[in-house]
Image (cartoon, rainbow, N blue to C red; front, side, top):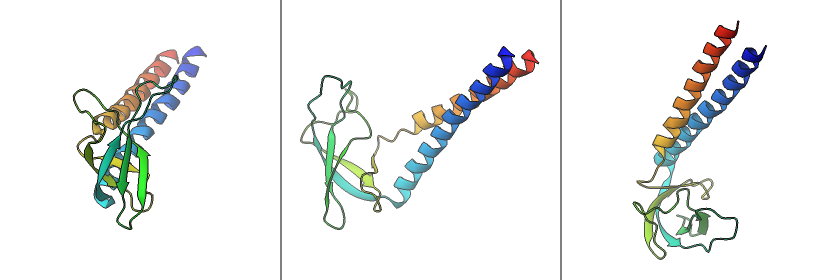
Length: 133
């Protein structure tokens, strides 16, 4: 009975990880295909007491003249800093400008890792279930 429960939970967890990766990849590709380019101004954020690594704010103007301010989808890192006052190229969704991807900082590897992890969990769960039966 315990092996079956592990198999079911493993399959569910694997399915969630796999779907998260697939949806993330789809969204990234869609934004690269239909997103409109813009130059975003990087604005530093003061971290609060519960913030881990705060993500800077990106401010840009859409094609129709609206000014949009969103949190960066990626953090500033020593290797790829997002300096306060700097500019970064972004692509935004014209239907919802809050959906942004920072050019050159897409997280394809992370999304592929979720897909691989999901498949690995599903296979391991099936193996555990087969051994338990």
